[in-house]
Length: 207
Image (cartoon, rainbow, N blue to C red; front, side):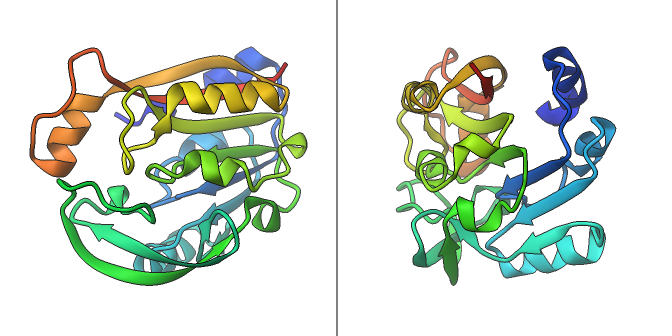
């Protein structure tokens, strides 16, 4: 199940009209069908893995694909995980299954977002750093992957992201939950955390 199945219903509940989404960490574009179902017509997909970026260009000709990571401008190294959706620019977790490293360029979100009015950020532990490089005033909605455990390559810590977004004039509208334990077991093949630990994709809208 993709938690973004609920995206069209959430947009409807907010009463927002969204036209252009920028997705940081677009992976294989699994969310595109849900963006379209919500009435979004323009798409910027940001993906640092060259193979995945090429696949996005092939499979989604209607989208603008930016082959880069987001964060403070410069150069970075993408540690490619055995499960490629968990590849990261952060220092790998000791239990991550890294199969290679790729040099990538890193661009501030404000430099790639164009006139997007919705941002989705999934940066495997660096979500907060990505948000800090955005012009957040341009967005009606921001969706950010977070984690209730401090884990450097899973997602940014939930409380930290919420505090930052509130300070920037947003409020939490809802969040979608996945099991931290289940994802850690899938990605790292080890048991970590407790049954109460969660990955939360948090939907923020203007306060």
